[in-house]
Length: 86
Image (cartoon, rainbow, N blue to C red; front, side, top):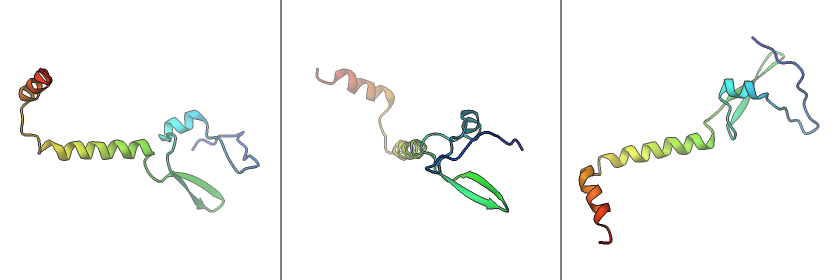
């Protein structure tokens, strides 16, 4: 276990997590986090995906659901786009 030293809690109760720790833990902006308590230790845990990750997952799910609805071939779609407005 690596213990980082030198961070202080601000008067507003905030702590800056060093960039290398955020990167290693995969903590992106807007990531939800929580705290667990074990004796005198406090542990930061990721609760959910960042908002962008959730939107991305939703988009992939939507695109996968559309796959079975497409009945045209790529060539047919390309022909429609080329002849559009002609």
